[in-house]
Image 1 (cartoon, helix red, strand yellow):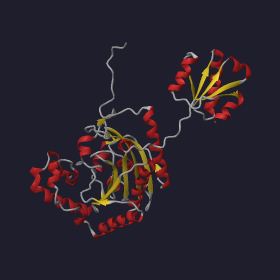
Image 2 (cartoon, helix red, strand yellow):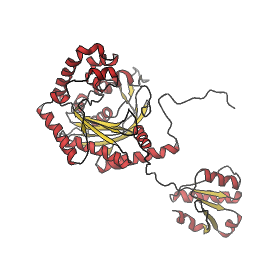
Image 3 (cartoon, rainbow, N blue to C red):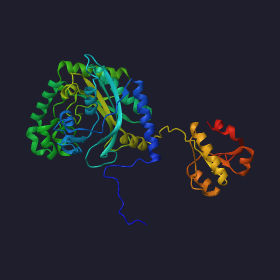
Length: 423
């Protein structure tokens, strides 16, 4: 036995084993199919970017940038600071600018992505240091109709996955000027209560006061009672935008609730914000959210281009499904296991195994030369739906025995026909 110490996975990460991976594959397939129906194309960006991207995009004052990023220098001379992506939007915007997707006046682009993000925070159930998101971003349309299309895509994804007990909450921070007015009003309201705030929110009061509204600390929640709502600071244009969002959601038969305290953790959000919660998750019940970011493309060096999008945590989604007792529609497993009586049959089965796989049949066999009894036991452990048995008699007659594992029935099939019969 080895005396070497075991190496474990880093804190806040988990291994997705084959039994669980099937659920992930199903959720990812549903995400891709839903995005395609809404005419969103897939984009894949690097998992690390230049650190400046997140400082300029997400914001210096956000908790993500100030506390949670995995940032390090690469091996270049001089070294360059890079950061594992903490969220998907900034990288997608960078890719859209760099690759000319938004160069032309009036250009539109609708993309989605599926992949891991990284944040150094206290691991919780469904909130890991490496977590995975399905997200979508739409560029080039400033109208509230585009906000609602993104919301509908997100809600349709959840519907197809079978999530129940969903609540959509919406709010508006307004345009750049409205958001600035709201920030000033909030600072004016909370400044006299600064000593009553948590240590984090005392810092946020200067750097990112809107985040105080999202705090779970009871001291902050008490201090925020009676705070002016964002709606009081909205310009006429922003108010009309948000009214249109609500009208379209109602026309689309999507229930929602206006939550005046709803904010998002990133500085780039303007106008419409939303968050979706689900039953089965306890107090931390958010499974995804999004919003509009009309200034971000310009902020990252591109042509002024409106944008809107969302991100949905896949770990949270799977936990919600589990908590609600929802079974994902996994594809039925059909596995054919080849059993060999003797070395000659084993050689025969290697050729048959290749023929089955080329025909698209999921097939396997024991590669260690174990006894027939052990081969059958392995087929049971692997939950094979059929067994093909070959021995001296089958080799002589050019047949195989095909056994149905569920019914335990067995028939003799010509070797030349068995591949077609199982395809």
